[in-house]
Length: 169
Length: 344
Image 1 (cartoon, rainbow over the protein chains, first blue to last red):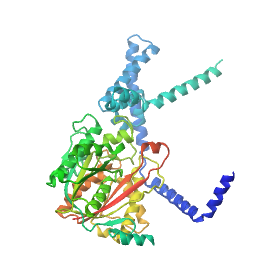
Image 2 (cartoon, one colour):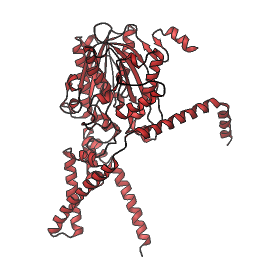
Image 3 (cartoon, rainbow over the protein chains, first blue to last red):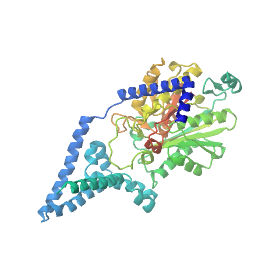
Image 4 (cartoon, each protein chain N blue to C red):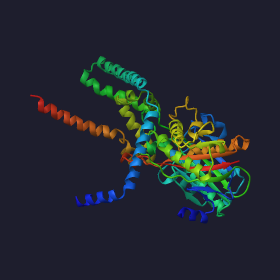
């Protein structure tokens, strides 16, 4: 309390300085507004459409794989795991061939949200950090982007499961 | 008052932060190497080497950048027809932590070395320091070089190379390449006649995908300081060249200096926009990186000066002095710009 009063007094003794800092703040604000006005905006409509189409196409591929496994005698629950494995493998191979980052540039969330995008983040990191060795490089850094997805995915899973447990009879 | 007293002592300093060389150092040799994307751009024929890929036969992007820088330096020495041991100092820098590309290239070159960091303004930092050293009579030959590499920059500042992500239209593409220039106390070639050392300016922008806007205030400050120190105006230069403001940043610069009565017209260009065909090449707002201003100036502009297209060029190399770590902590992006005057 005493300290803050002292500080207030010091500030009031330096009106020029506060004026200068206010001027600086005004300049910053004005520049920020100028930048926001002038800078090119992302093409939202185009991005929505490509994300929808590409994301949907990846899901259609997944559906074909799922139908294939079900036609060979697996039920829906049993067919899910091998379907995911196949789709992940496709994402991994596309990453290794340098296709998936191009797809991401084109489709944004349409490529990032499906499980192939998740696989891509892990493989891309693994490929990159391979230069720093198998243990301290690749293995420790491969979850550098996927890590937060896993952490918050598990946490939100636990929270939702707990809520369901509490409200179900 | 004290400013005036200083001016009496520092005879080569003009105004706030401008230097006028009396024995202007001469650029006697240059070496430029660019990567595959730059090699498809409109200036490709001006560069000494265009690489077919980013790797340059090395097993990691960092090693590749080191090799690019080292080779560019060797070409500059070769072109000047000077023995390596005659080169007094090697001043170099790049974008990586601990400026490893510069230091590792210096390990190979075995020339007494000063590592400098000015982010993407490193080329102008090098030219200014080399000019001071030569004009001061401390050396006859100083080699200046800087490099950047798309893949090493992505790894350090952004995401792993193959990660899927959609770049914002304001984002810039880091130039793969290196530019080197050998400055000498005597010889023939374009001269570095002056320099204005920039002040770090930060107007509080935090978007790391929009470096151009973050650096534009620094470029504006350096340009206006240069004009007020020297009494020059835009008409005194055939070409005013910014380092890597790209399309967004150069628009901001024009807006910023307009308030002070400076109109940037046809003689203003930006290296990041010259290096690529921004319409057909996927480089976002344009090029960036230490190599951007270095390869365009040493490769393209100096050749044009030899042809007589430009007589007097003002290069304002711009740099964003942030680190990914500080930006994640919520810090804004400080910008800096250093100006160098090159005359034919």
